[in-house]
Length: 464
Image (tube, rainbow, N blue to C red):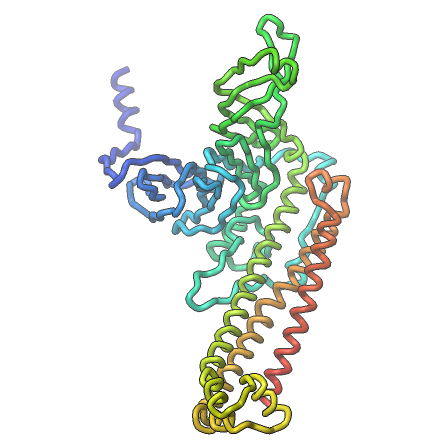
């Protein structure tokens, strides 16, 4: 027996590493479910990623105190809850934030991320079949244009499921998209008793306030047949866990258990305070997981397009603002010169008079001939021409393609919303989608008008 035990011990491949101390004590730590990684938060609020051999991969210092940690089931993203109620998703490779949402109004005390396991399909499941047709008609959407001196715009593609052609070449964030063929839900609980459910950790699909739930339990141990209704006052969520079939949500929390009936509450002032385990029925999510998955993919892609749209408009505003600043800098001495020549008109009126009538006052003539000069006018003209061309590029290569894809995706979402029997139960409002469809159409029309105006101006400049 001793010989067998020694042989078994020699067959084990365990390696002992010496303890290596960190500069600061560890406050929280979670193992990666798929890789040899350990995410830690130290007492001085540093978020650190280490391998098993204690090699440090990266370290970031969040601005707000970290209160909870959780890995995505595939191990490629880390969810971090903060004291201000925000939840940030960090890339496992470099620690960069790929998404940040505000779903709570107080510290996020616990996080749990679950992926739906593949269940046996029934005939009822096959009724909802949807194919995203956007890649058939449109190329992949353009990324946000670069803005000098600003950080790159957020790309939501690292946090959502796959909507594009799986055969296309994939970068790091596209690979993250491809890993989300199955629906996954991030559950978060805070110290005010609120639980939030987010598909892909991004798209909020449900919010539960534990203090508003009626809790059924036996009133007396001797009377097991008599049930009473109670509620939890001042609940504090300690742990949450969603079942793999998404039908049940288990909650561990503290609070005061009081009767929900006013008469009983008046006669019995005592309340039981302690730790409680609750089981919440979430069968609606499990039974409608296909619908939720498709709606979440569409809405998340729409959010990505809106992000590119907003960044493109910010870039256009900055380009035009810089051009106007250059123009004002060149003409800032004109007002003083006009006053010195006894003119009471402002620079805009003088310039309009020159353009419309061909007449220039003595002050304007001196400014153009002496102060600004021919070289200054040419440089100013080149600045304005460059601004127009840059605006044209942003609109043609970013704004217009994104607006077209956005209108198509909202139209697809509108078509899905018409299936009221299956989609209304998950909160997809057909009227709201119709309004979004109208708004996206108006955005596309205005962008096309603006592109036509700028294109005409650029063409006119080349003719001149």
